[in-house]
Length: 588
Ligand code: SRM
Ligand code: SF4
Image (tube, rainbow, N blue to C red):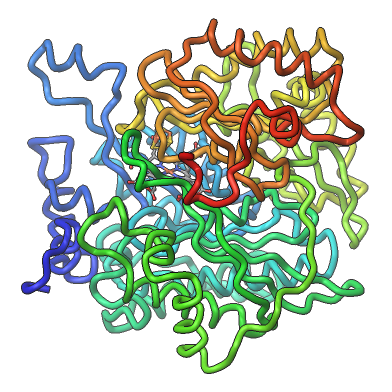
């Protein structure tokens, strides 16, 4: 490490004793609400970011006060599936220690915002009580593994969910630092005998697993002490639904199901979205398909791709550290050959598959086991109560029924799933009472297909608003959409406050990316199924200009689209924009 020129974060990892750093000292330092500088990097691996309230920053500065430091914590939920008890706990923790709201992220995780340093430990202990954890929520490791959020749709879906959990468990860091720093050896109460098949039994099994990991000697058999050069992401989807946008991931897996039987996965590698304005050698990129693997090979394939990126990834400049840049530097064929070399076998030729959409299907649906699922719209993924709309209370009451489970979707929505027919009416009654059913059904398909990242006031990287602003912009676009009879036409619209791409704006048929306060770049031409990136159409638009640009295109689409033609394809056919065929020509 000493002889190589590496980024500062690499040196922090090197010195950290498997992610400990001086976090304990930082937590006990009562003079400041912040943690020490190096610890701000390490705490990410534990799932947390130090933030300030950007709405208050300048006023605090004027008053010569320290910024109002608080912490965001991200809780991984593989495949987005949690129990009603876990939902209740997260909801209560948000009230007790956070800002009262739950943020459902674009990667099917929970985020709590506004936690003060003194409450961090108690909050994480609260997760542990229901066997959730925040380790690897952020940091240079494999992140929350995503999957189509309905494992009970078919038997094959159930199996894919099992694989998602296996991949997640296999690639979770093994350091005991998390348990040492945050949990102080806290473990679940296992004194009462429980059936291993019951919900409680499964929780106890997970507790044992955590304990085993806690007492394991500190070493990272997969990562090593320097972990990965950068974040790493994996998603699994079952065609025809690409509702987790697999091609935006370092590894995207398309399940191949033949005659109802899961055979394995087509493997795509090298997706990732972050770019920097004014630096054309940074770009969003979709993952390339490299071959098919049998289902019992999938964990191994993920490990080998990830560890090759661990070894070959750029550790000098974090702007070029993601797998996408490693692949474009060495060549896809070379990278694939070395993966196969490490696997000891070749990937098979790709199997046919077809994705149709990357959105969520709202409303009720039935499982293969006869139970019911309900998908609800959560604007901006923010579950909170306002005087007009008490979504958080409504979902809390449903969770209190203790039936079924809760799913976080890759589009920031929530599903209440596996509800027996006998309880369906009760769930519907509670949600109707709070207006939640109406809220999901009254909107245009444009709004229901929209997504925005957090941006201001907590994200330190935001140039512009996203989550707080998109609903108001859509109010205005809705008028145009309704006037043109497109109320039920799904047009995928995504907005972010900067080009890092957290709301996957490069896959928006309409993409808006913040340039400065109130100004956005407009991107058009993405595919409706997440398989083609969009391209820059106009720069630095304010609200009036965005509407002026989009209005005639929407009107044209209403009049001149072909049968079944999606908005993104239309904008290309009508020459509004050229197609992006690869990340490398995104800026052309
Ligand atoms: Fe993200 C950084 C929020 C999904 C690409 N992302 C951030 C930070 C932590 C800002 C920071 O570094 O200070 C944001 C915290 C804001 C806050 O106050 O909460 C943040 N990202 C989010 C979430 C919460 C957006 C949301 O509204 O749901 C998503 C959490 C996902 C999760 O549960 O793990 C989120 N971020 C994504 C995605 C989408 C995805 O993974 O499908 C991407 C694009 C895909 C990718 O990884 O390339 C994404 N986030 C980034 C990047 C750019 C990475 C790059 O390769 O350049 C950054 C900046 C960085 O890492 O330096 C970033
Ligand atoms: Fe923040 Fe940018 Fe991510 Fe939005 S896209 S949450 S502004 S880093």
